Image: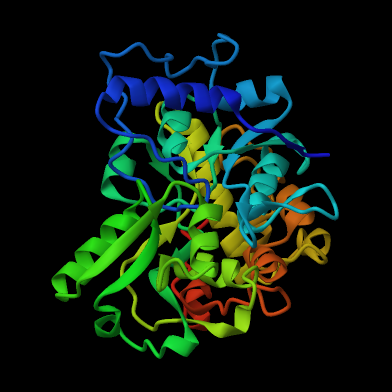
Length: 374
């Protein structure tokens, strides 16, 4: 059974980082997707683990070898966002779109989708968790930005294309950004959500009062209790959390897109072999959907007459260094292809009920596109 464990180490690291920052106050925000400037970058002059060392054990070797030695994948997740990663009270398991990508990676590397140590990681702790190597990979509805790409770690291909939106009560008859003049807007601190809101409404000349919170639950509780007129975050998050509000049908999301929010896995710096594994895990799940390879037919498709399908499923032997030829078979057998993961966690039959839109394959009007596996 996959284990769910709060990372005390991550919180301790966060405390040290904030102390070093001096006058910058921390903001614990486990549900936010965005926090750029609050995390200092690690530098080569600071004491940091060697790129081939496991900071938790001091053992030398590449991260792929260390994960296999350990026997489980340490995957940083949100842990409190329905549809993406949250603790399912009925099963006691971590569930969601991001959680299934963690399982896919564990299946590819260890042959066991349940060999995952899920580490709930708040917004401020994400950068340090990657920089110190506390997590093997971060799959936590995290937006790819220039700052993070150059300071936190290496971003794998985007798994979910999102945008920032604003949710309001339908009874208030707010239909556009201009209607928010004089409004109080709930937003999490230390996030690009907060920065984007200031940029967009400032450029539009809309005066508003931000009401800031450090935690996901605090932000939405304040909105649900009508302490603010609106709440802003990624649209996927707004749709997800709307289902948990006291009267979900009384809230609408404005059509405006305040930003681009490409969300995806991040691997720590310093290990190209491991980054390639994370990167091709995403590409392989997308390509499996494109070829119609599913959890139900993958064993039959191994003998496909289509050379591209056969190659994806191992016919040409090892292509990704460190992975067995049939690693995609193990992965798809365990969690399905990209479309299966999406539909199971976010699709029409779920409370979130998100349309694929940009997250459809490029052949279906979306922008999901995998590099050729050959």
